[in-house]
Length: 82
Image (tube, rainbow, N blue to C red):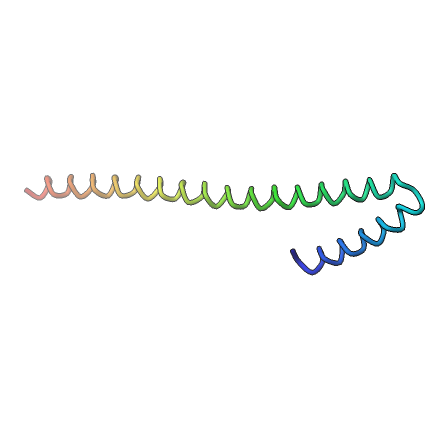
């Protein structure tokens, strides 16, 4: 967690305690916000991890393709020299 996230959690905990005294619907909304906030962060990190994974796969496919093309060109040049 970043420093801003810790501050956000502290502020929301204070609001939660005050909200329990004033109105029970307020803490429920705050807890829901915290839950949604954590799920969004998890989803973003998962998306970033998968994006890196698929980027690596795409680069490997591209490298394999270029290797195959280079071998084919080298074979043609070898047969043309003879």
